Length: 402
Image (cartoon, rainbow, N blue to C red; front, side, top):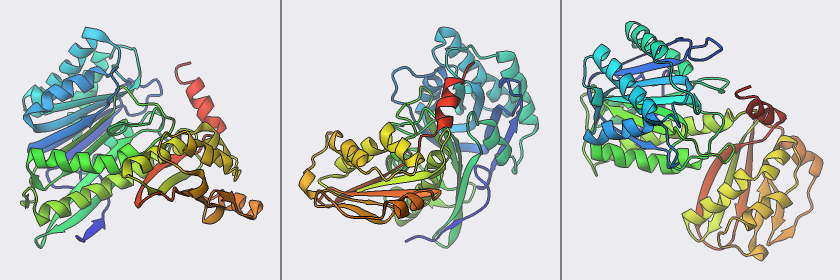
């Protein structure tokens, strides 16, 4: 296993990156709402995007820009999704890239753009442009925390992670930040996430590593079962550390493990900070015939409103969990099922086990809760991270635009 060490910071932890986050009055709150991440030199770049067929203008534009596999900057606004905005929305997303390119000194096609917020409203381009100009003036190698705050919407806190990985006796760094609390049931990434590294990685290899990490992390997070119109997960690799990571090499394996570590940390923070959430929940399914079937069962349980409300109420009503497993569509034999909640066995071979309900309920009050389901059919397993549904989830989403 490679040496991977957690370090402070996020997208500015790797060498050769600067960032900024400023308030441009796009959000009614007046909180920071424009973020900029810039590589000091051209970087290999790739991204994965929402599979929602109603996708936002910045997703369309960024897909076009990343075909060449290189980028210099990521420009983000929060408070307005620029989704369902037609031709004007596309023009605004392209204008956002052009302004950034002019300020940074690169081609518009070297800019990744992203937006998050309310759907169906035109971008206030005068404020976006002013925000980008201010952000360029404030770019700093210590600006990642401000950028992480600027991409937030209903998040209660910024989400950042960074690691240092040893490769051939040298150190490379990988850092990332993300946002997301609601409208999260990704089928690629989730909401907005941005990762940087100072390793030198070929674009095709970078893409493969990102997709592999996404499948095991961001695609295993769900808050409320809704796939966003704006989901974007982008990564830039600028090679500033002077360490090459050739495809199919031990160095590539070490880099991939480091990337997986960062993505895992960020994905868990998304679930932990779900809208109105009081706890992080891991649903682990084992004994499945395939990983895809294990994921199918785990997602069904994690997305069940009845399971999620029971978790909020610290109610060990385990019938809801097996019910959700049963309607998942995966292969399942009720007579072979086993269920453990917070370490307490509740079901074995499809039959209930006597347990101390009060003790399990108390254990469910912890900030992290684990559900284990064994299907008893095979050797494959998978985990999905989610959160509980509280009264606040309904309040936040009922009052989102009013």
